Image (tube, rainbow, N blue to C red; front, side, top):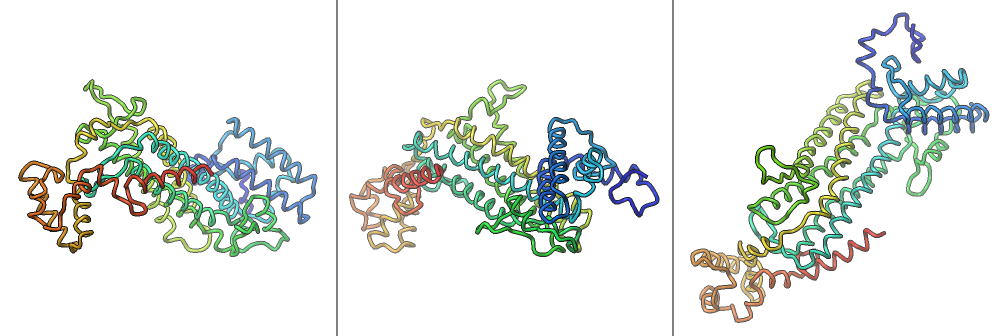
Length: 465
């Protein structure tokens, strides 16, 4: 018999095909650093409660450090018969220090061990993503000063709607990514609850101190008290935190995809709003003139993978009875894929944002097209006592008149305007035309010049802290 950690009651060797089928070392080896951290904390806790001596603890901790260094340098051979990263590390430990190494697993199971490893790993990943999103927000805010006088058409249904400051677009993405960061922070509250010590499913009769383990591993609540999972049966099966983290990443991917789609449109000849840097585009193998937005297209495309990872984890969990089931081995694949994909996208995005250039000549040449001032003209009528729906109808008729004449609202004569509504006076000239509209948009959060400049200042202050 091979030396399986669970093989005492077995008379027959595991079929090599089963070993190949059931291994997870091919993908969970990336958990090695957090597995070692968790094991070292567990050893220190066992020492505090008298289940290990101080000398044994020091030997275990030091040997685990050595093993961790070897793994980091690529010196450990992965073996399918050892199944996963936990067994590889424990086997290496026992090979080196014998019975002392065999004591490490006291008071825990692989069930709570892997859950602890995952939470430590997820905590690190979400913290990394938060920092990348912060850098992306800063990239958008840093654009605002240079684009301070630029006005862009805002769209609904991809039809020109109302004008807004370019900075209003940039801050819209800051808002989206701030919600993403807030969700990551909220998810960390569920991640930051210690499973270790719940053992297989029922806890242990040994005098372990799970709160000590929580302190050692940084599993603390907002009030700095240890945060420890309170139901051992739940611990073995709980992957809510993983599903939540993957969903949060999927929404980051969706926001990135929406931004990418918009900029893909903007850099077309038809829009002509934006020029992407050559370093973030590719050419055509046959058409010499092409600059293809492949980076943005792949950001848009890769969002599908992350969305699929949400489906995978939820489908995996939906039919599992308490407590642990081997199905949960597959949970890591969804998280690893979602994290790797989102990380790569968010890492690139700030570089594209900082170096892309607005095509001001092209933008300004067509800025007055599409009756972007129609809504403000309607609001002018409202301010003169005209009911909103009546004002809407009046301006609609004026738009139709302009379309028939091939002109803009600002080009209609005062008599023509007064035929449509006798409430219109000469001061209407201050309400039509894109620049006038932007100067008049004043409600909090609007795309007008003054509200946008206020929000830019607010975001600068917020992102510095």
